[in-house]
Amino acid sequence: MATTKKTRRVLIVDDNRDGADALGLVAEELGNEVHVTYGGAKALEVATVFRPDLMLVDLAMPDMDGCALVKSFRQTPVFAKTKIVAITGHADEGHKTLAMKSGFDTVLFKPVALKEIKTLFASVSVAPKGRASKPPNGRGNLGSRRRLPIGEARRIRNERKSKTLTQVESEAAICEGIIHFQEEYLGWRSEQILAHFIEDLLVVRIVGVLTLAERQLGKSLSPSKGRDLIKQVRKQLLELARPMLESLVHEVAGVKVVSMHHDISTVTGEEVVVFSLVDAPRFG
Image 1 (cartoon, one colour):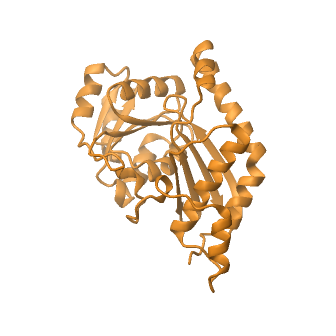
Image 2 (image 1 turned 90 degrees about the vertical axis):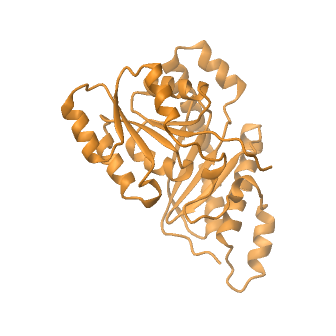
């Protein structure tokens, strides 16, 4: 159902997991929709789907530092004007100057005061909720509106001369297949699931699937131990189901999967699975 409610989408990128999760929790409490990721390279994939209004990015990260990350974002038209803020523990003019030259809008120094965070959020334009569910080419997101059972997808494909599905149909079939996987393997069902093919990548975003048991587990242990254990369990479950998921993607898209990467935010419960494909699918 359409809604006029508005909220900011905030992406937090920091390899310090405890700090990133804490900042994410604060951002959520201030009424934002938040995704937390723990590395620069993965942030590129996540942002393409999440389409944040604001990014808070650490400067010093091992896989891709904040300056390299913001340069990559600025070279992408959809993020050319997105507000991107550097957050760093290096409180000196040298790091600030380097960050600004790289493309950041401003720089905040750790520890960031709550007043600064509130002021920052207030400075960002609020986009209509649901805007990010449109991929870069402007199509509406079928991931949250439509399901296409695999049997129906096979019937549609067999009736066509091209023997292929459209991109919209393929994404809807992927969503239905993963919901079936959740029911069969994990014992729950999530309606908030989005899938997008982006060239030779398939990005699947599952929103808000942290179970009550996992939340209690996180509370019963230290934050770092709880987070790591939840991620480890989720990763093992996906690895067990990997042949089935890769077979689903292969059947729907007509291309094989090279690798599968997984991340889950233990703050928001949002899960992202990225499939790297041998080639970009050819849709009908």
